[in-house]
Length: 89
Image (cartoon, rainbow, N blue to C red):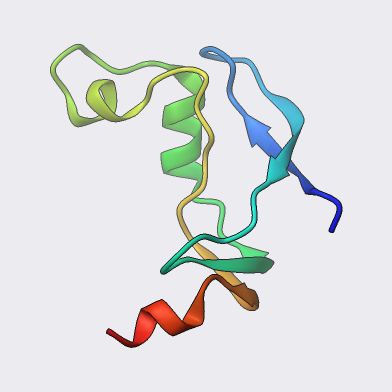
């Protein structure tokens, strides 16, 4: 089966946005492959991550490392289950 690919939004550095195409690996043991149907954009969170305007020692400073892939909420459908036999245990 050919490798699946998907576009992703990336913040390469503060105040920079790019769209990259990445390979999607086959789901491994205990993983599922999802197809996004809808994604949430939190303007507060994503704008803070994009701006880079946060002080050292804050949660933002510890969490946001460039290049940064924004996003944390999605509605999706299951496309493939990796090694379902191993999930029974």
